[in-house]
Structures are given as structure tokens and as C-alpha cells.
Image 1 (spheres, rainbow, N blue to C red):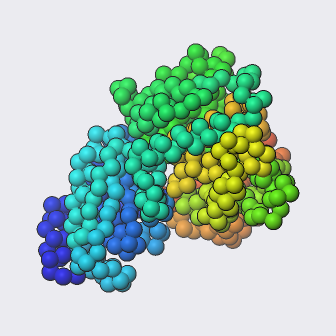
Image 2 (image 1 turned 45 degrees about the vertical axis):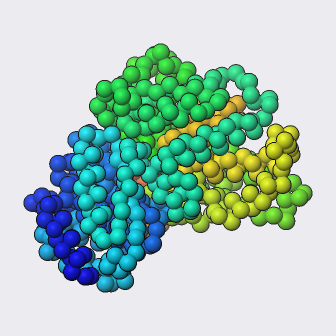
Image 3 (image 1 turned 90 degrees about the horizontal axis):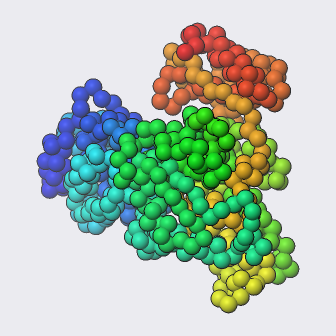
Length: 561
């Protein structure tokens, strides 16, 4: 590192001293904390983003958001060249940067890291970092800190993309690195045009049907997704989107609204009530990277029927499986690429959803908890679908499979799109899905459009969709422990291998309950062990969870919380 670069770093770092007594850790959500504590951290993540861009010789993204957290919090995370999350290999460096106690320590860390990684920081390569933020009041000041971090690396440029949903920024990074158009308008055009293509390919007999109207009502969590969805809705045909709890409406971000609140509490968000009985309702979270649907039952007294991420996954899997069957059964397709479809879940997916997917003949894979593990596993398939129950997930298409679809659809003349064979139309639908869904990360806007067009294609009401299967009752508990690392698990966190004897005790207890299933896993952030239990009745699930919590307590010598 030359003298100019060292002086630039020391000078800028001296304006961003870290708060005393605060230690931050980079997780799946990046760094999150009270916004007043984050100036130094965001500045340093700006440096990290510039270094990552130099290392990969690609455009990198930096998003300022705290998603479903309260409005006084904020956060920052990196989008890698693929549009996905920061490489896990760089997370320890992120932690060390954020917690370096002085500018001198920071410079030493950066010097050691760039030498180890072989990164040239002498200004002989020009790189770009795209910046985005959500609607939080603290976002603008933190964005300025990020800019100063990025530009403290010689040759790095920070481009402010404005107020965005988190998935929009990830989409832009992926598009830029694939050499595609990558403005916000390009994002809207790609989603709306692929949605219109899928609408045009709906079977004629399904265009008019009972029990389904063309209106969906959206709770936008008083966040950034509301404004974006209103604009997107103007570009669509065949769907009316009514947005409530938009950032313009004066409500408090994530307060009594949003996907996280609705999914966990199973109650109506603000601005919804009995007037919405029979209408498709959906909640986004604060930065619009997850969604859950819900039904307002007659005389609901504030309760809802939740249609969660497991049901969204099941709907997508059902539709894609149908299209693949059309594609593969045609004589002229037999020598073509046979797609490998895989579904990916965590142990927290409701057992009823897993059983349903297996009954469809689908390959169901499990990973440890966390989007980064789900996404990585989904890349192993021609089409990989993953979702968490909280509504975060997406569909990934392999490059080779997209190429085979493009070759197939290039043979179809524009005039024969609607009148072509089922195999031809299936290829067109799958190609449109690959463009509609956000393949970088889970995206509530693209996910909502895909749900809506599949329901129209099937001729289904939300009630019929919700009847695909009935969730098994479940219960989650936390047990305080002295050291969470005493619990070691395997088999995607479903089996305990340490301490010895706990696995056998859990299995013995679980066997007492019809449709019983239970696992324990250490928290990633605090000294607690999380217990998840399912059984055929709510009472049985509660009892099983409590009994296993006591077992954890006995084995680890602490009282249950």
C-alpha cells in the first residue's frame, strides 16, 4: 500500500471513531444495531465493499437497511457480484474491520488483509460500488458515511442508486455484472413484461373463473415496498394492487404491520379488518425481501389464516413441475436437456409441507438454518426453489437450463405463442418465470407477481391454495444455557451429536406423540438453545416442546427460560 493510500485511509478514518463498548458481528443480515451506533461501521463497510470490488474486479452493492427491525435501528450489508450475500470467507474480516479500536488498527488490518488476498490498492484499477437505502430517517447520513468509506480506497467510485428495496439493489448488482441494463426502470420493465407474458399464456378456459378476482390488497409495512409496488402496479395488466401502510401514509415502519409481525403473531396488520374478508391479502416486510399471504376469516376477531412461505414454495413447485412435465413429454423434447428440479427447506419448514412436496414426487433437500445455506444448495439444480416459512425465498435457474429454454423458444414464432403446443408454451412460461423471479435474493415484489399469475393460471382462489395441506401444530421455545456451543448438531441441525445421550432422550420423548417431530439447535447470536416441536394437536406440540426443553435444561445444567 503506497503512502497516498495510507494517508487517505487515516484521514477519513479519523472522522469515524467506533462507539466505545460496542461489538458488532456480521451475520446473514449484515450488521444491525441502533442507527446512532452505526456511522463508523457503515464507513468501514464502505471500505470493505471497495476492497471486495477490487478483489473480484466486479461491481459490488452496499445496502443500508434493517429490514423488519424497528425504525430506530438500521444496518448495512454487502451484495456480492452474483447479487447474493457477501462470501462467508470475508465475514471475519468484516467483523475485524467494524471492531478495530482506532484508525491505526484499521490501517494495520487492511494492510494485512490486502497482502494476504493479493489485492492491489495503489489506484491502478477503477471499481464501482452501488449504494442503496430504505426509507429510515437515519439512512441518508449513513449513506454519506458509506460513500466516504468507498472513496477512501483510491480508484473506487460510489454510485448512489437512491431509495430502493433490498432486492432491487441485489438485482442491479447481478444485472451489471452480467452486462445487462441495471437501472430501477429496467427492473420494473423486466418484472412487468415477464408478468404480462405469463398472463398472455394463461389457458383460455382459466381466464374467467369463479372465486378469484383480479385484486390483491398489500400491507407494505410502512416501508419502501409500498411506493415501489404502486409504480409497478401501473405497468401491469390483469391485476389490481391496492397498497396500504405505504411509507407515504404516515405510519411507523414495522409497527403493527409487515410480514414479520403477521407471520409471527398471526393477527391482522393495521388498516385491515372485516371488510377484507374473502380478498387476497399479503404483507411485505420493511425492505420488501419477504412476503406472506393471509386470509381474513368471517368474524375473525383480529386473527388470520396465514399462507406462509412454505405454501408459497408449494405453489411454485406445483406450477414448475407441471410446466416441466409438458416440456418433457413431447416427442421432440426427448433428446433435449431434462431439467433437475430440487426443493430446499430448513428443519423449521412445517412437516406437512415437506410431506406434501414429497407426495408430489419432488426431491426435498434440507440445509442448516439461514438463507445463505438455502441459496447455495438451490444452485445445485437446473431449477432450485427455496423458501423459509417467514416468506423469504426465490427460484434459481441454471445458466445451461436457461440456454436450453432460449434455444427452444427461439424456434417459436411470435404469432404462434398462444396457439403453440403445450410443450412450446411451457418453455415460454418457464423462461418468463426466470425473468420475473429475482434470482439474486428473495424479492417480495417479484414473488407477489409470480404468486398472482400462478393463481390465475390455476384458476384458484386463495382458499383453494391454502387447502393444499394443513399445517401441523408447532411450538418454539428457548432454553438459556451457559454455553450454546455445548450443543452440536448434524443432518441440517435435526440431530444432536453432543452432549452424549441427549439425542436418544429427545427421540424417546418424541416417539410418544402422533406425528411428533422435534429438534434443538444452538442460537447463532445468544446463549440459548432453540427448541422446535410438532405434533398432531396444539396441546401435544406444546407438551413435547416443554418436555424437550426440560431435557436440554437437565443435560446443560441451567433452568429453562
